[in-house]
Length: 257
Image (cartoon, rainbow, N blue to C red; front, top):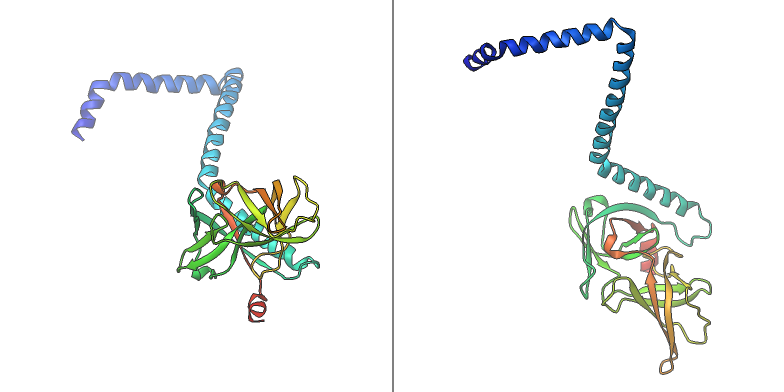
């Protein structure tokens, strides 16, 4: 309190000047139409800029929640589409998850998701994105799931040559996370650079016709009678953020058979 009184005593003249100036400007603005109009234009411009900054700030702060909401809504839409398509052999439910850890440069790569057992996650469920297969859940805890990435030496994905429905096996041979190899397609089949490789739907894990990549190069292996095929993934594993967990209600019935 003493400091405040000392400050007022020292600067009372300057403070009085400021108050009188503010009153004078107020009287000038509100008693003259031209000055009043100019002040309104000026204040409107700065108010709009200030509101824009506030809006952008809140939008940025809420961006994560917005992304989570959109991903969940997209997953619901994918489930509805799956149930309505008559050409699907199986119906699939989709649930979103966010990647919290991901490796692409190791020989055996894994992905950690932010959802576990309490969200319905379990071993053996497929993990995909809109334009590719990501991997298979290997283990789960209460709140997290560990996924064996497609970029793993033990990963074998059943695929087809899309335009001819010819089955093959996708394996990653290491080194480059943008490419993989396709095996078991016999070399009497006609191939072209740029042909699409898709999921086969033969397993109980992944839906059919998920486009995975394009043929980059191929050559005949005369020893075993099959092609050696190199494809380029549609997805960039390094930039993955959100994924879909896919589950078929008739999974268990198929596995029991």
